[in-house]
Length: 509
Image (cartoon, rainbow, N blue to C red; front, side, top):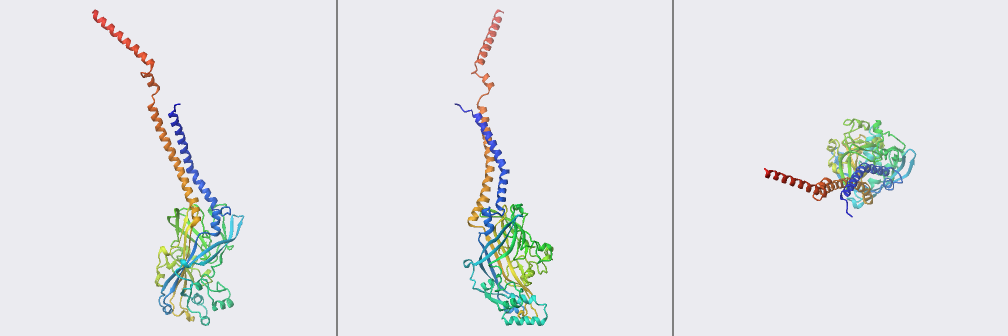
């Protein structure tokens, strides 16, 4: 049985057109399907196994690297010379984060407390926690500034108290003691007779409050009613605003808790988050696109205005009293101790701060903070939050421990909290949020290309077939047509008779 090639070609044209139509529909429906899946998987809900586990236990590696500014010239500092420091570190601690007391509320919010533990990682550190370093003694030099307005006789009494408990202007202790606390007779004395003056009732250390502690009671949005609000802080310790600062804008609790953000980010988006440790909300801005293990990302960094003073950036006036730009005065939330937060090595700060201390070398690669975000989901892929703790110190008459110290903002330590998605979580993330959407995108355009190719090829074949097979008119005029042959014979006979008659007439003449 002969195949009608023309009909087959027409059939392929129809199939190709349908394939193009399906691919075109998929270009509109595909992104909607992907976005719908992202919304379902980023809502904070125990049913979302992967994302809920990531949010609850933060299974990715997370570390805190600590660097000390070891004092090289303590005697010269006491005589008024410029401090000279040497960076020691990193001393690296693995950070374990886990949420507890999780309670869901009818208004689409969830409350929790996040607990943190730190464990020393010798293999990642330059030394051991037994290493000895020298930094300023906050109990002495910090208290001196806090109490400088008291009557002179009381300052003399305070100085005598320091001598009684053998507290000098500088601490020469191990990394472990400085980090997690050391026994101090002065601390015990102050807690007994001036309760509430110090942040701790036990050992005194720079991070004694952090280990085996929680960051307060957070209440955040689950995103069930509006995915644009997911992870945003509703309240912290029952507060919707702070009372540390001088303006409502500075006291506002904005953004998320700093671990995840709402999905569907653009380059115009920002990363606002509230940090209990910094006692304020902060906001990062887009810097550039990037890729991590095949996953597209946006890098967000701290703007130069983050720690600018009120003179350089008016909205920060509420964080004052200020010193040079690049310093955040956190005394109001640190028991009035003269502490300042900055970027490490005074990066992005007023250059004059570098003139007061020798041994600082700021650069963006080592000292700038950043968060790399997968923009479609709002999940951080790589995080590096770097901050420096500084002590404002000066000579205070009557407190002889301060000697002739020049007025200076003295760096003590800086630390980096870093984490990145790795292992099985990275593979699952890459498969669900990179490979599958890419496959769907290739499919939709593949259908369009395949359909168009099918239509074009089938149309060319149909045209060729029509040219090869003669049409009805050619059949009537062709030699194989019996009727045409008979007509030609009659016409030929008639012409022959006409010629004969003409010849006979000519002969008679």
